[in-house]
Length: 217
Image (cartoon, rainbow, N blue to C red):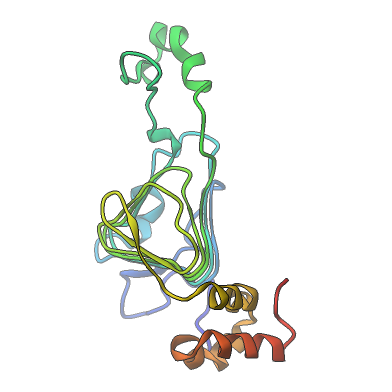
């Protein structure tokens, strides 16, 4: 039997692990089933402590079956300061005449849009993701990495700024995995094939998806 994705604490003896989908309440944060956050110090405060500067309309979208280690933070577009002139000081945020004279500058700043994380992505300890980044399915973000550019599917990145370390699979296998999209399988099928998902090959995953008519175009 698979764990209940609507349970905040899927491991009764370990409150440091939380499923995020039933936990988050902001309409600007969308998280898929079984994505979890692990933190010994207040895991349930993920929405307040790990998603920062979410003042604008931009959203954080995280897929299914992602593993997010303690201290991982997503910086949203509200963290940006104006850089078109001499000073980067955010006069507008303090209101009053400062805001009246500068609001149009802030509202006219370009935005990179939503931050989008695919499915089955692993974030190492204290990784940081900058605003508007897209991280592909199956990627791995190393501990302490600062992600300033989009990450292709099934790519390992690390460092500050994060750079590709290697691809986990070749292009043909990445295509197989993305078409098989095991994270979209019914939970019962995932449970029945959990061992293969963990230790099998892309061809194995492709075969299971084909047998059940679940391959995506």
